[in-house]
Length: 190
Image (cartoon, rainbow, N blue to C red):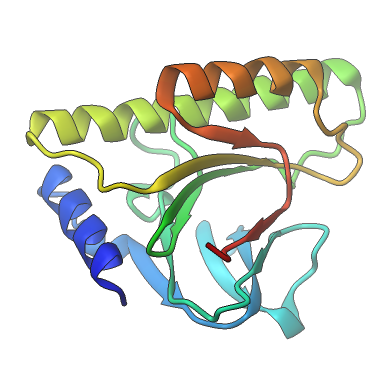
């Protein structure tokens, strides 16, 4: 684990005092792996490349085999279905912090349902950003200098770069300084 990661973990642990932040994180160092919002354990987990189904998980490329930390938010940091509206997880190395909301279990191809799922996903990401920012402010802490991103991960039949995602992309950047993506792949190569 790098100094930057240790600093971020300590900062979030202090900001969320009493929530046992450290019990909701795990790390992985492979050059390629997946993150699955696992229905059996009811939270996000790492999955090795050999066991992954790229259609139903976030594909992570890590060409420098850095230590990547997974913060399992929904189902681990917050009990399953408990707490405020929140995204599923976050991934971070020593330079990038990525919030993720998974909608891989969506099956409807209805444009209205797809839009509703995209709206719900961006709202969950936004509420988690606000939750983190409030916790940091209450503890008089600041987020270390990381590049921040948010990912809406959805089935391959979802349209990419929809009007909703485009407008949310601009809003997230202006309001939070966070880049928003609707992709199912993340590369850590900075």
